[in-house]
Image (cartoon, rainbow over all chains, first blue to last red; front, side, top):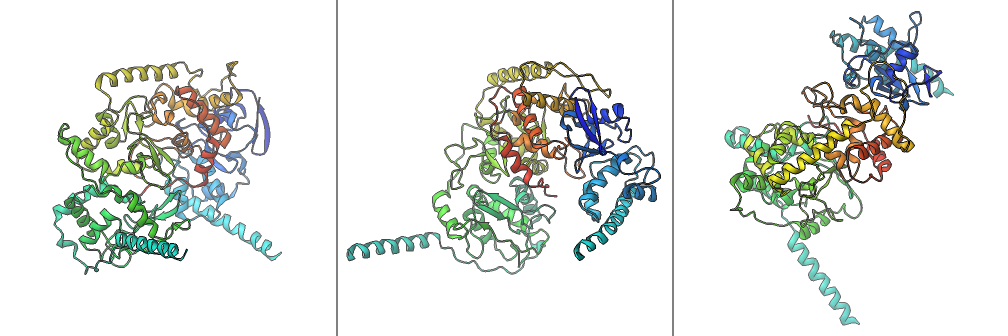
Length: 165
Length: 453
């Protein structure tokens, strides 16, 4: 039995310990946000967050996830109440076919949580492992930059409050 | 007693005078700026190839910095040194250096002003480089774009921060040998030896060093250290399951890959990047000499190749795992004798690695050699495998090449150690590695060094 914490919820699954996390998310937990792209860690469509890092869910066996926090695009918000990164992707109309987008959002989320207000250079470097075959990279970049601005301004007042204490 | 004291002082004074006389180097006059057009283009072109063979850019460029403008931090057991700006900027680079000053720096490790340079600069190899080759490199360097970038001071441990110690080091370890042609070998081998032992300074990483940081001359190419990677032995003690032939060394150096050895990685990658662009005959010469170091005749090579291939194929064919399918599979029965750690390592290998590292992989971009043939897996310590698992393998930006994703964020330290231990026991017949956790911590502590552009 492997215990998983996905988007804050505990799950117990009984599968072979070598099974990639992606298959468990999609087949067992019915979280179909993360996608199967290449299965080789080369395209990023399966990107989810493990603790605070973006990882390829197709290449991480379930045994390695035992007891660690997994976050998927479903955990960032809903259609009614999207999270700031999701909101920015919608505002910039960053998706063409959309297959890469959940992975793009999760990789961007990891960067902006660590470094709200990341520069364009930071974003370009950080997003490098994720590919979009439709070629909407420029819109994706614009979306991440927009999210960086909203997340930084959301962070500022709280920092000021802390500093004022 | 007084006589004894005077005698002692006298000896000391003579010793100090002798040391100063031996090590003191005068400042050479600064040179007025010289127009790039005044250098013979043919000489500049020759210098470009030689500078590439010497991989000057690899150390004299910092990550994200301008080529040859220096600033690369070299971590040594004695502290951190920063490479210098060797662009022809008159104020911060070598723009005011005459040919004589440049040649003296290459051969004696002394800068134009007469200061002793630390032996991280491999002048102990450049002593073998001919005057005409140094002149060509000079012409090439002096025709680069000048970059204004101040040199950073070395941060060496006391008392080595005094340059006088570099002078003493040279008295002990800087030899001015000459390479006499070896008549029993052909011209290519002799050319290869000249490049490998001289300008290419391969021994700087591939030869073990003594406690004072000098190469052990009695154990040339017996394996050393470069940027916290194990630099494999090139002699008969090489851990490679298949002894390298000249053709295989050539494939590796020129094309980054040999089907019986694998893919370049780590600090060797930027060296190969240079060797992909120099005259092919020089790379063949380097390969001919390098392969001769393991001193293996053709029949033995053949036999060991067959043995190693059989071993590698067997270890893969009998892997107790299935190629991962997109369906979740039911729990497999576990081998009863396996320890918890090796069971974990096996499961991680099956889920994270086997898609590519089992049966040759599906895609050409990921198709690796069988791990049973890998020098990394057979090496004396785990560092190279740990580096690759943590950071992966990536082509240079904008270029094609083999890819392996890094697992830095995906696997915990304990998981990576379990995986490395499993790979070692599964794909080699060598004893288990020790010190993996400490080595991994050191590798994790710093971000991956980005290669020079």
